[in-house]
Image (cartoon, rainbow, N blue to C red; front, side, top):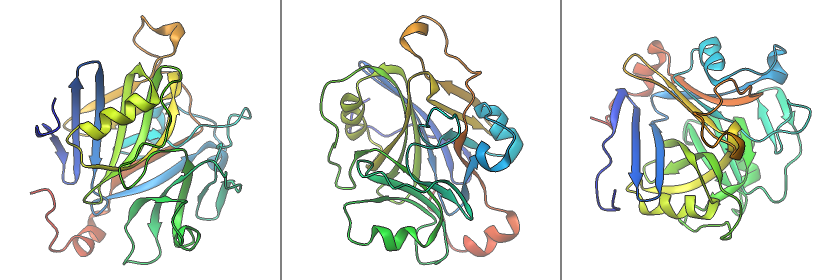
Length: 263
């Protein structure tokens, strides 16, 4: 696929689109989610006290249409490596200096984006964070100015990432085939996705993405070097995931009146 080609999006439902993109030496699964039609939630084993789950188990328990890793996590198997909270629940209260991105959702101000990625090199990032109920901190791969922030070199591994595009959609991204992070970023910028800020959420065999809708069910799981020749491990248990689910019908009519971003 070339940069000037259109993506063959498959509309799964209003505000939710799926695509598999292939270029020489690189393949990507992309799910495009319009925040005006979908709510984003943090699901955490540390909050519900029922243990880590597979992507499918998280999806089924909370009726999620799309699920992706929320972040890397510490050896205790529960705590995110970066700042993480949802409402009154705080998974990790520490803001990590070297992590430059925050996925933020569920604002208290209707004038703010319903979901976005905030960057730590802006002057008002702390103020903006205080207005969002869901906040998850991770490495930033690409800035909103479309600048790659990782250096070339490093290991090859599967990657899951969350991004924004030029019209405010949220993208869940997954590269199953092992790839260098810098190369991953380069490919994203050359694909016709209108990519802006990109946040890394997980790599290797833990990296995954699941889509579960009436039109399509698809699960993508990363690979480690040791399972290079197998299909991937779908029994990976994850303590924290980001999920997207349709806005409740009774609220959607009020929130979406007059909107037709995806005709």
